[in-house]
Image 1 (spheres, rainbow, N blue to C red):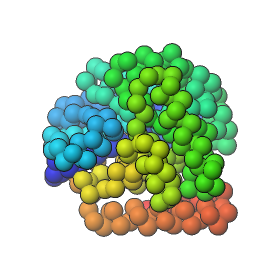
Image 2 (tube, rainbow, N blue to C red):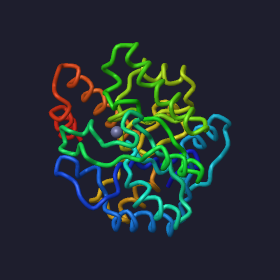
Image 3 (tube, rainbow, N blue to C red):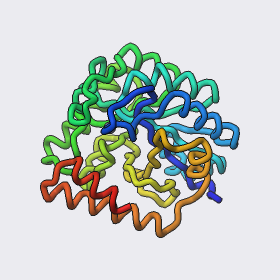
Image 4 (cartoon, rainbow, N blue to C red):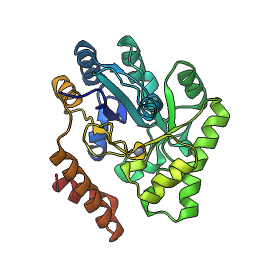
Length: 274
Ligand SMILES: [Zn+2]
């Protein structure tokens, strides 16, 4: 059971039919996505955006028990083409985290995964999405590991998407998802300082009302999750043990990356710690 302060924040990336093996964990087929979203609707879940979740928690406003947040990282064109029609058909809203440098272009930062050519959403797409009630949040400018950056570079990576998106779209941009989920106290403090109200990490636990708003955990959804898996993970509060394990994984992964291991090697090692 969950209490009203527990909210599962689901993390998706791409809703598409194909991917390289290295990127397959981040791609859910449209058919599978439809079954997952349909099952959540049938189970009685309703959705809110991340800025609404942050505002409700800050104000101490209780949310309906079966509230979830659906988030989409990176800003792939397939969000508009494949995910949005399914979300709309089930009355779900979403938060979309944009990597601003690649808007209207291709996913160049994914070259190591062999996925440098995924088409990204354009500014025109984003205007339509924002006008249609999708929350547009920030996911840095160039998708670096924020926790390893010098302060000035970090400030730029956090500020550019906020200023650029607000300027072009005319909407407040108050939600941030740290690329790869990596953050430090410095990253979170600067995120708050720049006017964001919340920040998302990735730690595969359900978010509770006690979470720091700039370390809101998210649950990774992959194409191998069945509809039943997604309903189960969304409707159950995480235990203290699961939270501790998630924290240990986070620290281990950061230690390995700082020790100079490449992203892929440290990701594999941190997966083996699960
Ligand atoms: Zn990302």
